[in-house]
Image 1 (cartoon, rainbow, N blue to C red):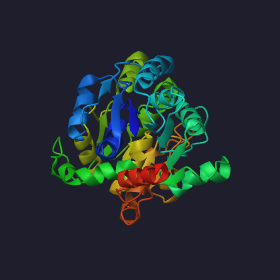
Image 2 (cartoon, rainbow, N blue to C red):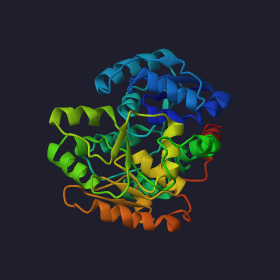
Image 3 (cartoon, rainbow, N blue to C red):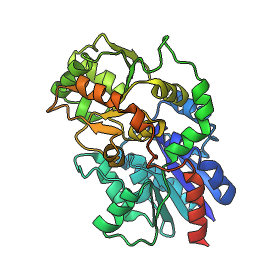
Image 4 (cartoon, one colour):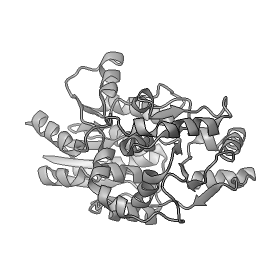
Length: 352
């Protein structure tokens, strides 16, 4: 049976890395990278770090435009004519691939069912449409399955709870991450880690200014790998980063996870980092007024912070820091780190 995996971003490389070898073992497998994230240097770093074989096809779309991605992916799938198409998450590459399937192809959506219920977010619209197209919906948690079955009315056939591959990635590489040196003479729990790139935070000058003013009040240094989008907006708005932010270029998986493992609190607007934080037992503050990872909020490992209506970030961060011992006792809602095996076992059973 021929299976094709289509991904296009660096986070997808991290999450799909544990699954690619199993797909190679059990299927006639073709691996496609769209280059939606088109920093070739960073893509190569992630492929090498995660020990992922090189994709069979680099489409070199070098864009996140849906129309361009659909054209390139559609042409590739028309040549390959797969029985199965495996796609992950909520990127434009994910939706473009789902829209481009040949007639006989069945779609497997990994990380199905997660919802923020905020249709202002392009990712939310991508998730909903991708689930609508998919034949197999592989949910990371029982809550995601509940959204699919009880709220959206999908039949249980074709739906399974398999955990999240981000936990697999950490389990596999935990020793290497622990052995990675902390940079800048940082001390354990002596700093905060920040990521921020979403357009609702960085594309609006007033909101971005408010967030920066709140960050400036934090009591510990803040390590900030700056996303290109954020850096571009800072220049456009004529803003400067506060003195307590240590701004660095984007870094690889091992370095980033080492920084997260030893930080006091992670502050982010990323969905995947909310998953990684609870996997590492690190308190998380999410710079959003909603989340598609509500499991972490319900468990009090994560708190939502709406920067339009709050200016007490330092208080929130200190309170989350105090919760760290309890967070580290939690059972991870995203599974035991064996999601790749569960996915392949499920597909082999379903496909006979």
